[in-house]
Structure formats: structure tokens, C-alpha cells
Image 1 (cartoon, one colour):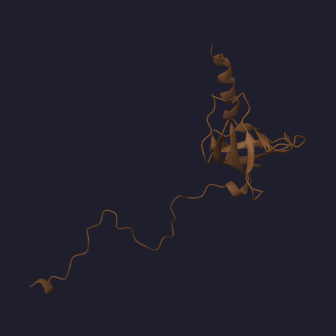
Image 2 (image 1 turned 180 degrees about the horizontal axis):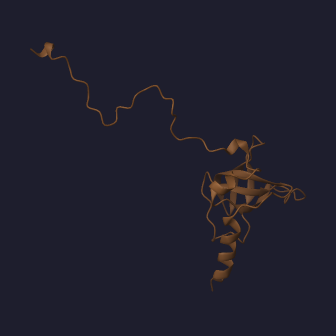
Image 3 (image 1 turned 120 degrees about the vertical axis):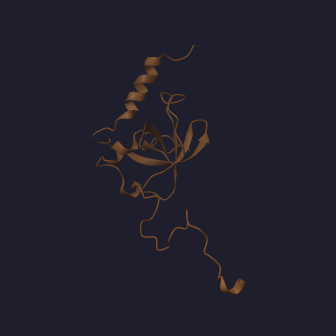
Amino acid sequence: MPRPKRNFLATAEETSHPPNSLEIGHGIARVQKAEGKNLYTVQVPDQVEPLLVELPSRFRSQIWIKRGGFVVVDRSAFENRENKLDGEIMNVVRDEKQWRKQPYWPSEFVAKPTYSEDSEEESTVGKMPPLEDEDSTE
């Protein structure tokens, strides 16, 4: 029998709005790769090496995480355990615009413009190709 719909709605509501502040040991991370078995490789702004984190059971089969998305990671969750996991996903960033407005959003994850405005080359989209010299054909 499937989980009740109220569990799904509670999880969706929990992830839809950013908290006012993050707890100690929590941080924003960018998802790099899904490793399988509810494990994800994430990049934290203050570390060079990626972390391996686990998705808790309350999010499994309810919230999908895509590559390049953002999550809140608790790195203190697995400090006492000796295994390959570096943390646990505490929340999934769904409405990225609201999250980016928060003071705890890392400056390394600032949205970059897709197109550069100062490109010196003119675009040739929608223009006719240049005409060849008419004198050489006569």
C-alpha cells in the first residue's frame, strides 16, 4: 500500500520555503552526481573535494534531485561514524529564487548570466550572407 498523500504534501510544503537561518553544521551544496542507492556527490563552496551524502527516507521516491540542483547538507550528522558518508541531505532547494535572496546563500553559487552582454562580435543570425564582388563575374 502506498504512503498516505498527507506525508507527500507535508514533505513538499517543508521544501517549498527557505528557513530564516540555517542550523549549525548545515550548509548549501550543489549536486554534482547521483551515485545510486540514494547517495549523491555534492560540492560545498568551502571545500575543494566533493562530499558523499545520503538522502533520508522521508524524501525518497517523493522529491527528485537533479544534477546541478541545490540541497541543504548536514555535515555533523556522520562525524562520529566511521564510513564513507560525509553528511545527510536535510532539505532540497525547490524554489531557487527565494533561496538566493537569503543571507546565508553562498556567494560562490551566485547565478551567472547565460549570455555575455559585452561580446564584441556581431551575431549573424537572421542576416543574409555577404554578396560576392559583381565585377569579377562580368
